[in-house]
Length: 237
Image 1 (cartoon, rainbow, N blue to C red):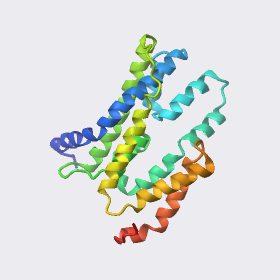
Image 2: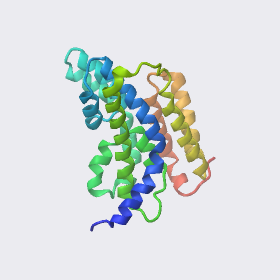
Image 3: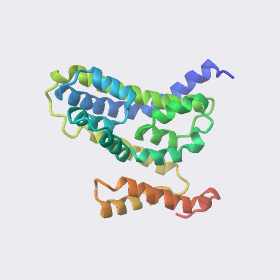
Image 4: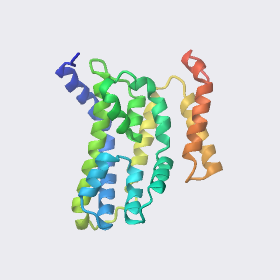
Protein backbone atom coordinates (compact mmCIF):
# COMPACT_ATOMS: atom_id res chain seq x y z
CA UNK A 1 0.00 0.00 0.00
CA UNK A 2 1.49 3.28 -1.12
CA UNK A 3 1.84 6.15 1.32
CA UNK A 4 0.05 9.36 0.40
CA UNK A 5 2.44 12.03 -0.92
CA UNK A 6 1.04 14.58 1.52
CA UNK A 7 1.92 12.31 4.42
CA UNK A 8 5.46 11.86 3.06
CA UNK A 9 5.93 15.62 2.75
CA UNK A 10 4.46 16.13 6.22
CA UNK A 11 6.86 13.51 7.59
CA UNK A 12 9.78 15.38 6.01
CA UNK A 13 8.62 18.70 7.44
CA UNK A 14 8.22 17.10 10.88
CA UNK A 15 11.65 15.44 10.78
CA UNK A 16 13.70 18.39 9.54
CA UNK A 17 13.46 20.65 12.64
CA UNK A 18 14.79 17.82 14.80
CA UNK A 19 17.88 17.60 12.60
CA UNK A 20 18.76 21.31 12.53
CA UNK A 21 21.20 21.04 15.50
CA UNK A 22 22.88 18.13 13.72
CA UNK A 23 23.09 20.22 10.55
CA UNK A 24 25.16 22.82 12.40
CA UNK A 25 27.39 20.24 14.06
CA UNK A 26 27.87 17.93 11.09
CA UNK A 27 28.76 20.72 8.68
CA UNK A 28 31.55 21.88 10.99
CA UNK A 29 32.79 18.41 11.92
CA UNK A 30 32.39 17.12 8.38
CA UNK A 31 34.44 20.04 7.07
CA UNK A 32 37.07 19.30 9.71
CA UNK A 33 37.24 15.73 8.44
CA UNK A 34 37.41 16.89 4.82
CA UNK A 35 40.20 19.32 5.67
CA UNK A 36 42.08 16.57 7.48
CA UNK A 37 41.82 14.36 4.40
CA UNK A 38 42.95 17.25 2.22
CA UNK A 39 46.07 18.02 4.25
CA UNK A 40 46.82 14.27 4.34
CA UNK A 41 47.08 14.25 0.56
CA UNK A 42 43.66 12.95 -0.52
CA UNK A 43 41.31 14.57 -3.03
CA UNK A 44 37.77 15.57 -2.05
CA UNK A 45 36.48 12.38 -3.69
CA UNK A 46 37.81 10.29 -0.78
CA UNK A 47 35.97 12.04 2.09
CA UNK A 48 32.84 12.31 -0.06
CA UNK A 49 32.70 8.59 -0.93
CA UNK A 50 33.77 7.49 2.54
CA UNK A 51 31.01 9.60 4.11
CA UNK A 52 28.51 7.95 1.78
CA UNK A 53 29.67 4.37 2.33
CA UNK A 54 31.18 4.27 5.83
CA UNK A 55 29.25 7.04 7.61
CA UNK A 56 30.94 6.58 10.97
CA UNK A 57 32.62 9.83 11.93
CA UNK A 58 35.18 8.50 14.40
CA UNK A 59 36.10 5.59 12.13
CA UNK A 60 36.44 7.87 9.12
CA UNK A 61 39.07 9.91 10.95
CA UNK A 62 40.90 6.71 11.94
CA UNK A 63 40.68 5.44 8.35
CA UNK A 64 43.00 8.23 7.24
CA UNK A 65 45.85 6.62 9.17
CA UNK A 66 44.82 3.16 7.95
CA UNK A 67 45.02 4.33 4.33
CA UNK A 68 48.43 5.90 4.89
CA UNK A 69 49.82 2.90 6.79
CA UNK A 70 50.58 -0.72 5.92
CA UNK A 71 47.64 -2.73 4.58
CA UNK A 72 46.28 -4.72 7.52
CA UNK A 73 42.61 -5.76 7.09
CA UNK A 74 42.45 -7.61 10.42
CA UNK A 75 43.60 -4.54 12.31
CA UNK A 76 41.08 -2.43 10.43
CA UNK A 77 38.28 -4.88 11.27
CA UNK A 78 39.13 -5.05 14.98
CA UNK A 79 39.49 -1.29 15.27
CA UNK A 80 36.16 -0.75 13.55
CA UNK A 81 34.41 -3.18 15.89
CA UNK A 82 35.94 -1.54 18.96
CA UNK A 83 35.16 2.01 17.89
CA UNK A 84 31.58 1.29 16.82
CA UNK A 85 30.63 -1.41 19.34
CA UNK A 86 28.13 0.99 20.93
CA UNK A 87 25.94 0.57 17.84
CA UNK A 88 25.14 -2.96 19.02
CA UNK A 89 23.36 -1.41 21.99
CA UNK A 90 21.71 1.21 19.80
CA UNK A 91 20.27 -1.57 17.66
CA UNK A 92 18.84 -3.38 20.68
CA UNK A 93 17.19 -0.17 21.85
CA UNK A 94 15.52 0.38 18.49
CA UNK A 95 14.21 -3.14 17.86
CA UNK A 96 10.64 -2.17 18.66
CA UNK A 97 10.72 1.16 16.85
CA UNK A 98 12.17 -0.28 13.64
CA UNK A 99 10.28 -3.58 13.53
CA UNK A 100 7.57 -2.31 11.14
CA UNK A 101 9.73 -0.17 8.87
CA UNK A 102 9.65 -2.68 5.96
CA UNK A 103 12.08 -1.85 3.15
CA UNK A 104 13.44 1.18 5.04
CA UNK A 105 15.03 -1.04 7.67
CA UNK A 106 18.33 -1.86 5.84
CA UNK A 107 19.07 1.83 5.32
CA UNK A 108 17.97 2.75 8.86
CA UNK A 109 20.44 0.17 10.17
CA UNK A 110 23.23 1.37 7.89
CA UNK A 111 22.58 5.06 8.54
CA UNK A 112 22.34 4.81 12.31
CA UNK A 113 24.67 7.22 14.05
CA UNK A 114 24.73 8.71 17.55
CA UNK A 115 22.65 11.69 16.47
CA UNK A 116 20.00 9.77 14.51
CA UNK A 117 19.73 7.29 17.37
CA UNK A 118 19.21 10.11 19.88
CA UNK A 119 16.39 11.61 17.83
CA UNK A 120 14.61 8.43 16.72
CA UNK A 121 14.89 6.85 20.14
CA UNK A 122 13.49 9.81 22.10
CA UNK A 123 11.12 11.70 19.80
CA UNK A 124 7.41 11.01 19.58
CA UNK A 125 6.44 10.75 15.92
CA UNK A 126 3.87 13.51 15.29
CA UNK A 127 0.30 12.61 14.41
CA UNK A 128 -0.51 12.70 10.71
CA UNK A 129 2.96 11.53 9.70
CA UNK A 130 4.22 8.09 8.73
CA UNK A 131 6.64 6.53 11.21
CA UNK A 132 8.75 4.80 8.56
CA UNK A 133 9.18 7.97 6.52
CA UNK A 134 9.87 10.06 9.62
CA UNK A 135 12.72 7.78 10.75
CA UNK A 136 14.01 7.62 7.18
CA UNK A 137 14.12 11.40 6.77
CA UNK A 138 15.87 11.90 10.11
CA UNK A 139 18.51 9.38 9.08
CA UNK A 140 19.08 10.52 5.50
CA UNK A 141 19.07 14.22 6.39
CA UNK A 142 21.74 13.64 9.02
CA UNK A 143 23.89 11.66 6.60
CA UNK A 144 23.47 14.28 3.88
CA UNK A 145 24.75 16.96 6.29
CA UNK A 146 27.86 14.89 6.99
CA UNK A 147 28.47 14.14 3.32
CA UNK A 148 28.04 17.81 2.43
CA UNK A 149 30.39 18.98 5.18
CA UNK A 150 33.14 16.46 4.41
CA UNK A 151 32.92 17.17 0.68
CA UNK A 152 33.16 20.94 1.23
CA UNK A 153 36.09 20.44 3.57
CA UNK A 154 37.85 18.29 1.00
CA UNK A 155 37.21 20.82 -1.75
CA UNK A 156 38.15 24.00 0.07
CA UNK A 157 40.44 22.66 2.79
CA UNK A 158 43.56 24.14 1.24
CA UNK A 159 42.01 27.62 1.36
CA UNK A 160 41.03 27.53 5.06
CA UNK A 161 43.70 28.83 7.39
CA UNK A 162 41.84 29.88 10.57
CA UNK A 163 42.19 28.03 13.87
CA UNK A 164 39.39 25.47 14.28
CA UNK A 165 40.49 24.24 17.73
CA UNK A 166 37.51 23.35 19.90
CA UNK A 167 34.97 23.38 17.09
CA UNK A 168 33.99 19.77 17.87
CA UNK A 169 32.42 20.97 21.14
CA UNK A 170 29.35 21.80 19.05
CA UNK A 171 28.37 18.11 19.16
CA UNK A 172 28.87 17.90 22.94
CA UNK A 173 26.59 20.88 23.43
CA UNK A 174 24.00 19.30 21.14
CA UNK A 175 23.89 16.08 23.17
CA UNK A 176 23.49 18.07 26.37
CA UNK A 177 20.45 19.79 24.87
CA UNK A 178 18.97 16.45 23.72
CA UNK A 179 19.50 15.00 27.21
CA UNK A 180 17.80 17.98 28.86
CA UNK A 181 14.83 17.76 26.49
CA UNK A 182 14.46 14.06 27.25
CA UNK A 183 14.71 14.77 30.99
CA UNK A 184 11.83 17.26 30.77
CA UNK A 185 9.64 14.75 28.91
CA UNK A 186 10.23 11.84 31.31
CA UNK A 187 7.63 10.90 33.90
CA UNK A 188 10.35 9.21 35.93
CA UNK A 189 14.06 10.01 35.70
CA UNK A 190 15.33 6.55 36.58
CA UNK A 191 16.80 5.92 33.10
CA UNK A 192 18.58 9.27 32.96
CA UNK A 193 19.92 8.96 36.50
CA UNK A 194 21.08 5.41 35.78
CA UNK A 195 22.82 6.60 32.63
CA UNK A 196 24.63 9.39 34.46
CA UNK A 197 25.59 7.24 37.44
CA UNK A 198 26.80 4.20 35.52
CA UNK A 199 28.70 6.35 33.02
CA UNK A 200 30.43 8.29 35.80
CA UNK A 201 31.33 5.07 37.62
CA UNK A 202 32.68 3.48 34.42
CA UNK A 203 34.70 6.62 33.72
CA UNK A 204 36.31 6.44 37.14
CA UNK A 205 37.09 2.73 36.83
CA UNK A 206 38.10 2.37 33.17
CA UNK A 207 39.23 5.87 32.21
CA UNK A 208 38.18 8.20 29.42
CA UNK A 209 39.44 5.96 26.60
CA UNK A 210 37.66 2.74 27.58
CA UNK A 211 34.55 3.58 29.59
CA UNK A 212 31.88 3.62 26.85
CA UNK A 213 31.42 -0.14 26.31
CA UNK A 214 31.44 -1.04 30.06
CA UNK A 215 28.98 1.80 30.69
CA UNK A 216 26.61 0.51 28.01
CA UNK A 217 26.84 -3.06 29.29
CA UNK A 218 26.07 -1.81 32.80
CA UNK A 219 23.14 0.27 31.55
CA UNK A 220 21.75 -2.65 29.57
CA UNK A 221 21.92 -4.89 32.66
CA UNK A 222 20.32 -2.33 34.98
CA UNK A 223 17.54 -1.36 32.60
CA UNK A 224 16.80 -5.03 31.91
CA UNK A 225 16.38 -5.63 35.64
CA UNK A 226 14.03 -2.68 36.16
CA UNK A 227 12.18 -2.97 32.85
CA UNK A 228 9.04 -4.58 34.25
CA UNK A 229 8.53 -2.02 37.05
CA UNK A 230 9.01 0.78 34.54
CA UNK A 231 6.54 -0.72 32.09
CA UNK A 232 3.99 -1.05 34.88
CA UNK A 233 4.39 2.64 35.64
CA UNK A 234 6.27 2.20 38.86
CA UNK A 235 7.97 5.38 40.08
CA UNK A 236 11.41 4.22 41.09
CA UNK A 237 12.70 7.78 41.12
